[in-house]
Length: 89
Image (cartoon, rainbow, N blue to C red; front, side, top):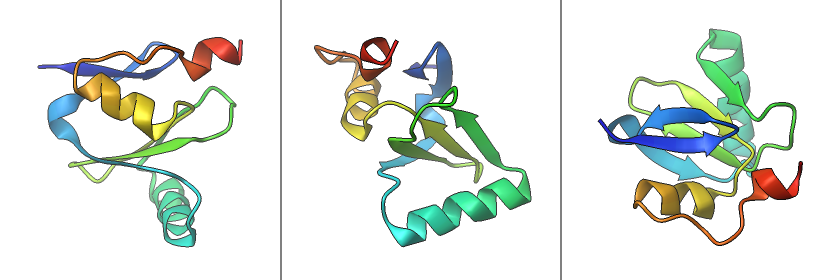
């Protein structure tokens, strides 16, 4: 099982990841609110701004403080040059 770091030492299973999307659009914001109300939201931002929303095959929604491009690169086995989590610390 391959795990993907979504920031601050939090990991998700790469095989269960369906999509990595930005949080800006109204439908995504609605999806986050519905997940929060349904108890299937996992907030891995540690109080920072949400920059990526990960949709899992179980229906869970994971919020990350990393850029979607960074998470996508990590699923492919590559690390980006600069990590936003380290810049914010």
